[in-house]
Figure: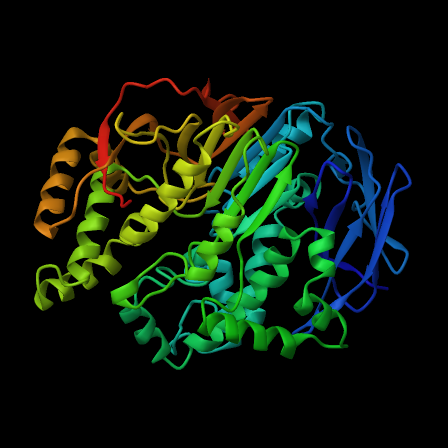
Length: 558
């Protein structure tokens, strides 16, 4: 009898009543999802590297309703598990015109029983009160697994498979080892139940493959010279496609996807997927990992800021030309939506000192102060992780121009929010434009939230605080002058934060209003060692009015 190995994950869900549910079984079978309201869907498993997966489509769910569901493999019930301490997994279909709650964050390392985990805490809160406000969608903005920094348990498991004295050492090397990371992360009981009942949209970031993935052409050349990198990259993209990317797509998009058809149309789809992953790893234009979701009057644009990079020093870009054209085409027309959310793992607006350091570094690496400084710049770029949007000045300008255009003129959305993670703290940044230039009518914000579950050493906290300070602002200006950086055409303020801790942000969108909340996972002190729950540390509306705080000027191009 087939058993459930991983999942279920409720993935795509739209207000029109379609959904997908992802599962992994322990052998070939037919997966069926059966809802209490009579809705049902089924799909045969497909095979990748000896693993058996299914993405079950559902259609005909009623907007404004909630229905419990169960999973059957070859008609034998496998979910929910017997004697579960959690409520039934339920699909909540948003009602037309209802408030939309979008919860987001990034950077979740393997579970640690001694630490707080924001997803565990969210699950505990929802399980304790099934009638409580719950996210309508969960955006996971990168680093769902850490392929380059594994837990002690995974290290022991790897050591039993191969000699860790040989590269890549105690890091994952191939597909089977990647699957271990997903089991470790998604079989956590609280997270498993949470992902079964709250729809999720995913993006990768560097640790899903390796730290500093695609930082520079020199970095990539060094990786390609190693004997293990090709298998690491191909396996990382394969597992991401299976575990995360497929669920980002709607049933209609899945039906039109030639790779999905090829993988499902053969007894073993491994080679078809491997060929695709090798092609995608070699050519940033070969695959599109970005995607768009429309939920009522909200458009969510999820933008890949890792695999679509152009790394040649003379034409460095966060996005290749095809990706830029696609992103331009996804901007909503006048009156098309009330809110535009741009999800990208790396922040658009950084703390001022970090922004200026990245622009300065990009200028050095491009040769603004000669070959010796270019070599110094490359070393600094890797050591300090100077690789965000600011480190690609042309792409920073492109994204700024897109945001300005999307938020301007009659029929513009009420808000344009850039949702990001990566930098292991949370903050709100508010840009504004000079009076002489085009003035967006939308409330534009950079909303950054990370980590979901990770540690932030005290020196790193001090560095981020310095990055937002007046001293940091002055240091950044000095770096920009040294690099000969052209300055400045628009400014931004820190409108909230920095906040440190394991945390999640939630945007509540109702009509043309928006409210932002930050919740941190904290362990109850009474009784000592009590349960981990979410504690709200910030809750306020997003408005276009200026907010006092630090001001930074940023370069851009027209």
